[in-house]
Length: 359
Image (cartoon, rainbow, N blue to C red; front, side, top):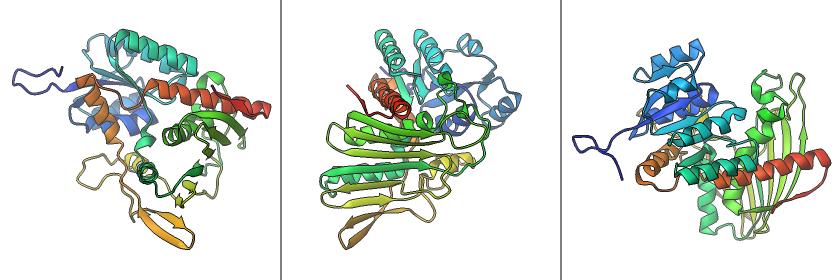
């Protein structure tokens, strides 16, 4: 049941954000602050420069130096965990035990078993839990999903997907750490999105084969990877993720019995957020300039397909709706655990040179 104020209006849900690094500052805080029905109430950061930025951009939000300060004085409705990968489970567990709905940045946990244990705890306590898989709301993914539902490609047999960029020098970021607890490297960073998208489109995976390499000096985590999946449906997905691709391949290439779809370039929402833009600033959101188009090819016939506007705000709108109504959260923890099964199998395949089976 939706709580209301004395004036009969729905009460704004108070959100606490743990972490104000790249994920918290770029992806979470700006969208939370612009989502109707949500209030960015508290941000946890111990860095003075981050605290100053929070005070400037979100003057109504309280800055808490520790997680203890987040929970103690505040009656929060939602906690967002946007910290390093190795802290996701303990922080999410603490929020669940406090009875607060939880959003966890991907990957949800270091292993599928940890993810399922966390999901079981949330179910036992009847606390909503979801994972921030924002790439489900990329415009090109939404466009491809529409095409598949229309049947225009016929029976799909191959799906190719890439997240590639050019960063030939290591940055020293924790994501480049080879420490297993950190879950660094492109496999768990970019691969978590690519695998999630593939499973969303084509269903459960039964076989995994992968290749991973460390190409750059100064990093100990894989920065170049390829993953091949065989879905139970018969579709084969080929996924590339790389930090050392001086020339990027197609973002999507999908081959079916009645045609093929190809698209290039990246969804513009991340770049807009990095540049300081926010949804609802009076300009179109989720669209590129010039507008992006994909190509639907059937033999000699090539048709331009406009790429839909991306919609990261839809994730937090769905969170707000679910917390109020008791409905389903936008991304299930079970789906996140399935992705972690596949990523673990991919890492094992890369090490052993063997095909790994799932399920």
